[in-house]
Image 1 (cartoon, rainbow, N blue to C red):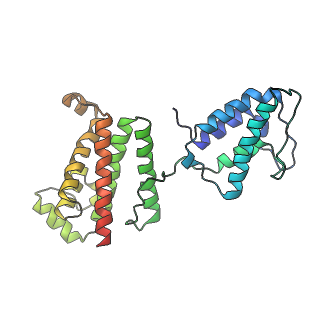
Image 2 (image 1 turned 30 degrees about the horizontal axis):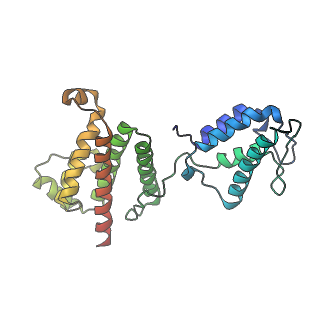
Image 3 (image 1 turned 90 degrees about the vertical axis):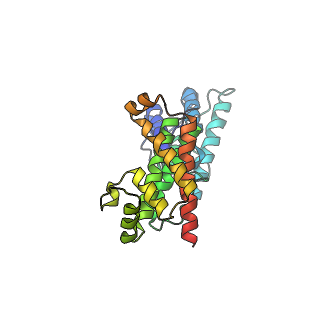
Length: 263
């Protein structure tokens, strides 16, 4: 089933109901039986929006669900009464249900971490934490939609971001000693490192366990399949297995960093 985000639904509403786009309070806009098919399309689009993206205040949510119910009622009414017209919903703002739905969806984000997404409480920077949670939520969405390459690649990027963050919290002398111990050649600027360097140094410093490092190495190899030459040379492609392996690496790293933060 396709996934629709709120901004896409708003664009659909604007195309189906251009006169409702900028309706102001008190302006009269009627819906009649001639709008039947348009309203059916509106309901179909709204039903394709993931529930976690309908992120509204209590008042906005009441208007949203009441308007959806009103639209359904209109469609049923027109089956037996073609002359019926509808303007607004008693008790709510004096706007068409179409306008109320549009305004509510315009307030909703196109990305939002699902309820199962890790909290990442060990990261104190709220902006960075939220960005990573959005990425992890996107990975979950890609898995749900069988988008194996997207899940594989994005999971590898999240592992990289988490390990970079963890190493940035370490004493620079300890990091340098770990680099030398692993026989690596690495820039003094951690942001210039690659995923392999992050994994090996994080393992050396006991930031991640040996099992986590093994899983991360698998995830690294699978993420590199995004490069056509490597995929062709190895005769491999991203699939459900590569996606699940890469996502497992994310989970292992998150668990290790959570435990590290509790010490």
